[in-house]
Picture 1 (cartoon, rainbow, N blue to C red):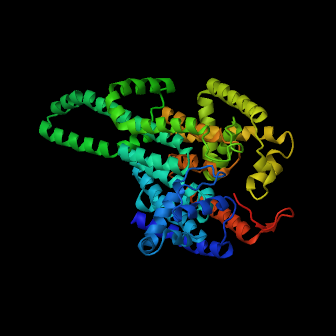
Picture 2: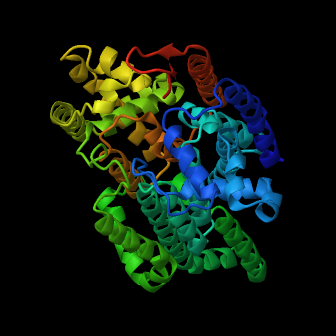
Picture 3: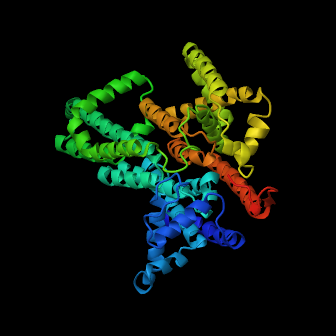
Length: 504
């Protein structure tokens, strides 16, 4: 019931908004002027044709080709391949993402249900719908960009890993990389979470074995029938197995430090080395193939290499923290969260002072030495980051430094929220994956934040229905504003013909 309800609710806005958008804007816009003609070349069977200005692999075009073929199967047999290009119109290609958005919402529903079995169907459905409204994901549902496909494939890869179908997960990882090459980082993150799950299972199994003799002695002294006790224990073990996926996140051992966790993981991993090698060798092979491709290609991007060179844009990580907390404002800027951070600070005051001061100094250094103003950011006033940069970040030489306390607070709040329900090693893996995905990107593009944001919010233990409602209201308000600006507030450039529109 939950899946069907989610699919119907998401479809209820995807279909009408897509119709309105395609009626007002039937032609390709912004990055679509590259993606749509390239997809149409594939529809015509010209697989050797490639636009050198496209930076991402052709995964989205193959997905669209399969999707269009499923919509119009008769054309495959009754018409020449050249005619197929007429079917691949801009609205039809955009509808690929509309369908993927529905599939993505179902995947989010299944992941939440898997990680949070205590959530009922209604609550899981409601949380899923709220996440489907996340503005950066929602907006690009209606355009032919790679973002929705990228998120969808990464999430299904993660779901397969949670279900311990590692071969399928690795295969989907390859598809994710074919959609967007930076997904290699999220493939590695997913593999790390899979290793942590297996290690946790092994540790829990050993703990159960060690506790069994004591439990049997205790029960037998009470005069309870031993065979009955064995049946109860078997029943209890089956319950443990069902809820194992959440045991790693629901009850982290806060007394253990990061190095202690790491030591335990390495020891258990060594004992499981052959099992881990068999299960995760597909991920390793995929990593080696990707490294070979980058070496052969000379860059991680396919085209326009000069405009997308890898840069040490460390401040991008600070932007992500603040933007993510902004989209989760009812949680991170609430009185309860302030109180939680205060208690954590007071509890370990000497270490907390050292960490906060260090984080502040490092953030100042990032802002001073690693703030990059990409030419695209400075020249293109169609993007919202253009105005954020001019009106806030770079409004005055001091403004960028005045934002540092907000950056520090945002990451402190994120780590605090994750630390309540996740192992420290998991939090570290998430931080490193986010940094690896964002720091090399010289351009401020909020849509790059979508995948790490989804991992963040899905693994944050938000049980308060009011918080979810307020986030849903926030997302809906932003979506209404951005879509109205996009469709009904066009403008013109003096130096270039055509209508321009505001976009993320």
